[in-house]
Length: 258
Image (tube, rainbow, N blue to C red; front, side, top):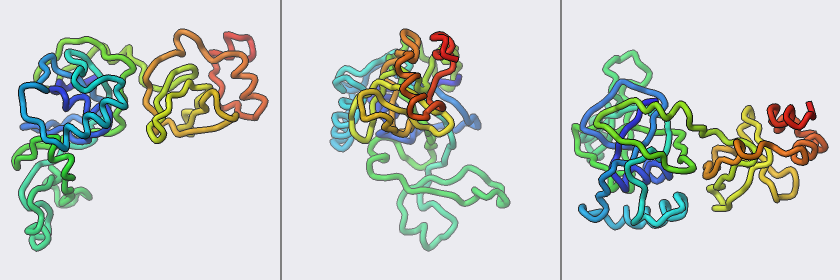
């Protein structure tokens, strides 16, 4: 897996979803999975951070990363994501000169092929995004999607540029039965009873059975499946309610149910 080393607090702001774009002085043609690595150096006390960013750090990082924002992890991989696009930061973006004249700063598609459906695409960063990056025209905005915070930071020495993180081969980021997840819309922490990857839904334990939630709304915060697979009791409850698609086949075989 490719990896990118980023100073704190920007790395954790990306990991918790508060920041979607990482601004860089250089572009890349790479698209695909990427690990977010927090640099060893912590710059919180050595640079001026805008008040808007401080507020977002306290609200999002403190709540979602399970730590005080003054003590963010460093020298470790903290999340995985998909690098889906790279945009060129410019003054007055867009193909319409009259409209562009009213936009101070934006980011344009890198494609120069006029036949490409994305030719002329652009967007205007929000005030929050501008506060969380260096949007000087001439730089680039790396767009990240499907960001998943790791349950625990994985200590690793970072590098400059895009580098290969071999540890990514052994890190499970998908949600499984008996994992603990954070349901972002409610802020509640759940233990997972069953998952249906095809539908992208899960059933939490402890709610009127069978309640469901979307996996995209949940962050994996502790892996429990490796320690204790889906229980026979959970499997039989799912069978009783006609929810066989939420049964983990490996667990069922271990219990001799299928």
